[in-house]
Image (cartoon, rainbow, N blue to C red; front, side, top):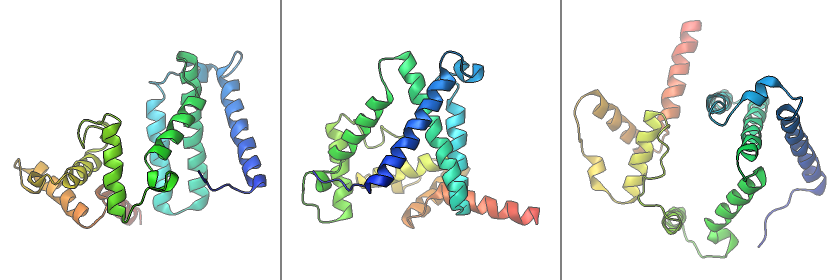
Length: 212
């Protein structure tokens, strides 16, 4: 199995910084560490994870590489912080999380890691769904997080059910504003546009106009 390797100097420096960040988290959470950090739980960190993710999204919308780098660091640290708390409350660790996602990525990309012949992006996506079924996924929409914003959730539902050739997704099922919004999201999916991002950027444009 061939995986692209970074130059050794770059890789070593990255690992040094990664280890440094882990040690900072351990110091803050350890005996004599920060009282606020030591009071946190997996549940109390949920809003901070959401906030940091949204700040990274905002930086990407602004197309500001320096801001993106800063916010990416904040997201990475929040994830490490959560992983260290998980270690304290269970037998799982950051190593387990890294191993799990690595194995999942390899398993779901047989066209890269097992030389499976794939002729198109469409076939890649179909194969991805078949692999997820083999992992125990019960329906095409069973893994959509319930905490997703409504627009993003609607588009996920539309996208996944269309891939399953569910034709009723093209027909109105209710009445009123909710159905109209759903129809607008369906149009966004037709255009291969992320509805959540499109509406967010439109709101930003109005906000900027108001500030001006």
